[in-house]
Image 1 (cartoon, rainbow, N blue to C red):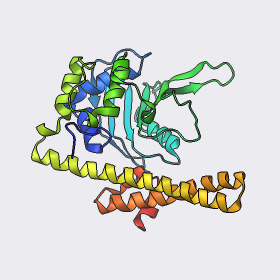
Image 2 (image 1 turned 135 degrees about the horizontal axis):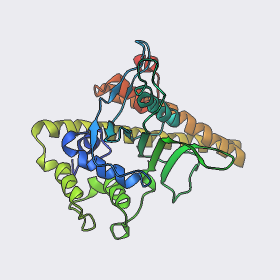
Image 3 (image 1 turned 45 degrees about the vertical axis):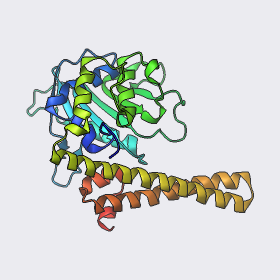
Image 4 (image 1 turned 30 degrees about the horizontal axis):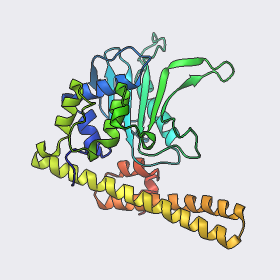
Amino acid sequence: MGGRYINPFTDFGFKRLFGTEMNKELLISFLNSLLHNQEEITDIRYRNTEQLGSGIMDRKAVFDVYCQNTAGEYFIVEMQKAEQDYFKDRSVFYATFPIRDQAQQGSNWDFKLKGVYTVGILDFVFPDDEYAPDCMHHEVKLMDVEDKHVFYDKLTFVYLEMPKFNKTEDQLETMMDKWLYVLRNLSKLMERPAALQERVFTRLFEQAEIARFSKNELFDYEESLKVYRDLFNVVNSAEQKGIRKGFVKGKAEGRAEGLEEGIAKGKAEGREEEKVEVAKNLLSLGTDINIVHQATGLSLDEINKL
């Protein structure tokens, strides 16, 4: 596999570091580094990551990591490896499950809710230059558009555009810097950086070292790595194909606006082809259909027809 430490952008790597009881101190430290205005998290309790709708026909959700802190607040933590057309809609939809789960039976419930946090670690950037190139950490709440005050502070979305994080080891200042550096570079490191001397990183590098894996763990990681690499290559190929299509169309029309329109159309066509190819490849690897749906945005009916 070519490296000493696991790739945290794989399903196996992410859940090994953040989704197990024995490593919950890693998740606690990571969340505390992101949520500056919240009371420090001292402990968490993992919850079932598979959430079912209230009815038999309702759509379900499968989270990467789902937990509560001692104050009863809910945290959904997701590693998102590929851009989806309705990624924001998906984030909001996921947040409805811990909100709904707080409903109490009987007539005396006063609708008081605990906070819900959705953390998205994105292996892509938001499209259309929504944020500046040097702005990669986003904390989103419901806000009054007139006077800009936070209207409701119990629903928070945190997004990290990881490709934008380019700090070097000597530029790391905060714990958030250090965590983002680890996530961005872990699979490329051959030893623990001198800047990461906190005890929590001792635990992280122990758990991330591939040589410590059992035979079964190594097999699971290799399979997860194959899926990640396949997804990465398909996405990259689709993007290049879409750009080439757009360039040919724009050049043929001989107009600057034709080139721009062609590139846009080519990218759109490329994204659709990309979704289908990703779905086919994931299905060929035996990936659960619900995971294929989450990774591609295709409907279950579309996937079943492939």
